[in-house]
Length: 192
Image 1 (cartoon, helix red, strand yellow):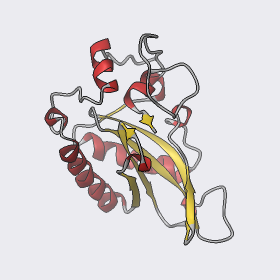
Image 2 (cartoon, rainbow, N blue to C red):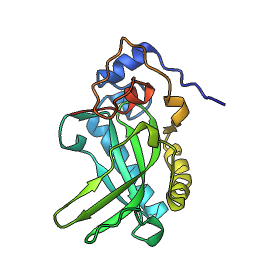
Image 3 (cartoon, rainbow, N blue to C red):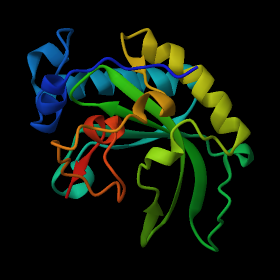
């Protein structure tokens, strides 16, 4: 069954203009700091209830504008070991929660990060990674995290819901895709 997300062209236009599209708090405030404060509270709760650590990208990847907050949740345990293991430093698979800054929607995917004293490497959010879990412990964490997020009024979008082509009149200012734009790009874009 293919679920349809009812979203108007006006709402898509608002998203692409960095305007919120929800009447519920905190998006109704259209205040980025208020929205981030809300997300910080939720992420602390996720860490506490799911016994995970987090690395969260609040700063738009250092430049430009990201329409989402990229929260990466992991445990420093063997069941979260990354497929790629560097000779030095740490490397883990983790659950990526992309939280829309402009709406109550989120998606879940898997991503790996590696780091040491000299820097690190990381995934970039990709449409094809949504709901595609390779690591059992990450899939299980997704099942724990989803009801906590939904308890705060957030709504999970699936890969199939976001796989609707956008009207060609819309151009999405994103570096996260090299294919025709879909609803994913309207909600989760990064303009570098």
